[in-house]
Amino acid sequence: MKRKIYDELLKWKEEKDALPLMVLGVRQCGKTHIINEFIENEFKNHITINLLQNTDILTLYKSSKSSLDKYKELKAFINCDLEQDDTILFIDEIQESEELISELKFFAEHLKKARIICAGSLLGVKLKREVKNFPVGKVKTLNMYPMSFDEYLMAIGKNDLIDLIRNSYDNDLPLSEGLHNMCLNHYKEYLVLGGMPMSIKEFIDNDMDYIKIDSSILSNLKNDYIDDFKKYVTNNSEILKITKVFNSMPSQLGNSANKFQYSKIENGARKKEYELAIEWLLAANIGIRVTKVTNGLKPLKGYEDCDYFKLYMSDIGILNNMLDISIVDYLKDDLSLYKGVITENYVLNELVKNNFIPYYWENDSKAEIDFIINYKNEVVPIEVKAGNNTMSKSLDIYMKKYDSKFAIRISSKNFGYNEISKIKSVPLYAVFCINN
Image (cartoon, rainbow, N blue to C red):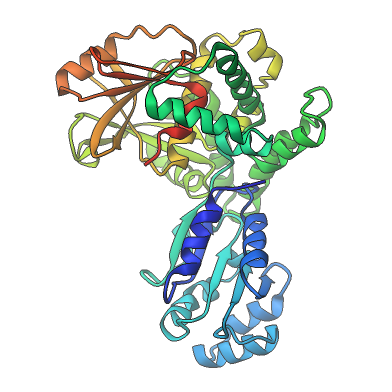
C-alpha cells in the first residue's frame, strides 16, 4: 500500500550529509514496513538490526568503549562499512538502547556519508521520558501516522477519484451527485476501518466485504496499547492512571463541557495526578491534544490557554471500536451526538497528517470554532458538520470579530465557495486536500 511518507524518505536520501533519521509514530501504523520497502527499493546495500533480537549490539553500546571502537565492532557485526556508496543501516526497535540513541551524534559528526534510519515501538515515549543525552540537532525526526483517507483510496484502487476530488477542491467545482455519494460511502467505510494498515488490508483481502472481515483486529490493537502500558511503565500506579485516561477518551470527546475534564476519569480526580498519564499517551502518539486559544490572531501559540484542551484519538478506527460502532450504525445514521464527535476526530486526524497544528476557539458567550489553523499565511477558522445542516452562528461571530478573509466549512455537502460569506465548502471526504 502506497504511503505518502515515502516521498519524505526520498527527500532525506537526497540530502547532502543527511543526519540520522528517526521515524516516530503510533504502534502498527506501518513504520517498519515502509522503511523496509524504502531501503530495499532505494539502496544497493541495506542492513537491518532489530534490537529486540540482537542482544550483542545492546551489550556493545552499554560498554565503556569509545565511540570509534564501538563503531569498529558494529562494522564487524554487520560486515559492512556504512560509508560506502549506496548503503543504509536500519535500526529497528532502537528504543531498547538509550546508549545507541545517544551515539547517533557520533554518526552525524564523524560518518557524514552514512545513511542511518531508526524506528521503534513507543520511541516517542522513550525520547521524552528516558533518554537523558539525546543528540539534539544531530538527528532528524519524521512523524508517521495511520493511513489518511486519500491513502485509503489509493489502497482500494481509486487514484482517479483522488484526482477528481483534488480538482474540485482547487476550483470549488461540485462533483457529480453520483461521484459525491460514492465518495461519502467510501468515507463511511474509512471511519469504521480507520487508518491502521492491517485493518485496511483485511478489508481488501476479503473483497471489501464487511461481513467477511475479522472485526477483532482493532480490538486486539486496542488491547496491545494497554499491554504496552504494562510493559513500558514500571510503576503500577502510573499504569492504572494511563489506562483510566485512555479508557475515558471516547466519553471525554462527547463531553458537553467542550473540554477535557479530569473528573470524567474518576470522581475526585485532579490535574496533578493525571498530567503524566496524559503526556505518556501523547508521547506514544495514541492521543492528540488540541488546546484552546483566546484570540483568533497571529501568533496562535501566543494565545494558547493550556488549561483548556481536548484529547482526541490518533486513529478514528480505534475510536469507533472503543465505542462499539459498526458500518451498520453509519448506514442507518443511528449515532446521535457521537456522529459529530467522530466527524470532528476524523477531521482533526486529517489535519495533523497534513502537518497542521490545530487549535480551537470559544468566547464567553459559548460561540465555538472547532479548529483554527495557520493556512496559506492566514489564520483560518474551520467549522465541522457531520451532516448537511451548515447553519452556524459561531462562525459568523468569529469572522466578524476577527475580519477573517475566508473560512472553511467541512460537511456532507458538495464543493463550493460563497463569495459573500467567504466560506469555502469542503466535503468530508476531501479534508486531505487542505494541505500545508
